[in-house]
Image (cartoon, rainbow, N blue to C red; front, side, top):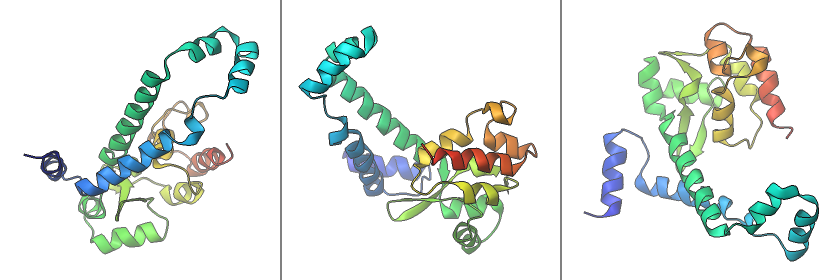
Length: 194
């Protein structure tokens, strides 16, 4: 039994809707970003500056072995990528959930009434967009406000994390409870300014 065969079997058993090759490519992309030159160790000049002005906690980080930190970062990125996949539906799964044809889901995505992101050769639809077997009310306003280029994990994190501006409810829950979609859209649009 090879790791590839095992991976394909696990993905099929859990009806993930992507191939092992697509998962590996997605992990490789995510891990490449985590280990990009932007995450390289500080130069001598930068380290000297941090030691002089960063305070005791910053100096402590400089003195740590970077290997375990890099490994922890890579593990966190891998977990986030797997979570992003596990918390999404394929177009076929979304169609089954809503009791419609897959072409209707594709139409909702293309008309920005559902949000999807590309994963390999397929599109994935985050589960946070659904309340049971229905699309969240006001979702079209929210989808229109998602900043382009925002990572799916960032969007999911925002939509599933309680927000003080929304009565301490997660935006998805806020919408499910009949909350104002415009309030969610404004907060979400603000994420693109950072």
